[in-house]
Amino acid sequence: MSIETAEKPKIPRTDRGRRTQRKLLDAAAKEFGERGFHEASISSITRRAGVALGSFYTYFDSKDAIFRALVVDMSEAVKTAARDAIGTETAPLAVERAALEGFLRFAAEHKEIYRIIDEAEFVDPASYRNHYETIAERIADRLSQGRAAGAMRSGLGEVEAWALMGMNVFLGLRYAIWARDGDPDAAEIASAANALLARGVGK
Image (cartoon, rainbow, N blue to C red):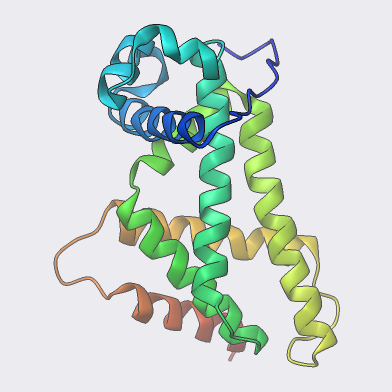
């Protein structure tokens, strides 16, 4: 099943409306994360949010619409987590280490993101593709800045950005979603990945 209609997002005009919409998105993250798109229901989302069923339609036209809005919201949350983790870092390699550590910590706290983004491939392919393309563009921009700063080699571009994103995604899967006792923490994982990025695997 794919979302064929593209309802325009409804933007709340008041602080109360924004808080209600936030409650619905947070509840939807739990509902979709636990039950999946097809088993989730609007009534369950509103119960989790503590919002009247009728109020749902003030903010979203359908289950499809809130799912799509949630994918966008989660993409923004990943962006914010990385940006906050980077903080005042300016050295290109340090920026990549901090961004990965921030993502790993975010994924550990929001494990539902993997199921929701994975389901988006089939429920709303456009949102799924946009999620990854947007992240890859941000990484490519950082690589470009690294080249300009003289800290990274020339020739880095889209291929390397997607490869780096793939590494980060699967590190999150293994160490945030499939975490085991005794695993290294987010800082250690990010440092190891950063060493790989800095030195490569060639002898």
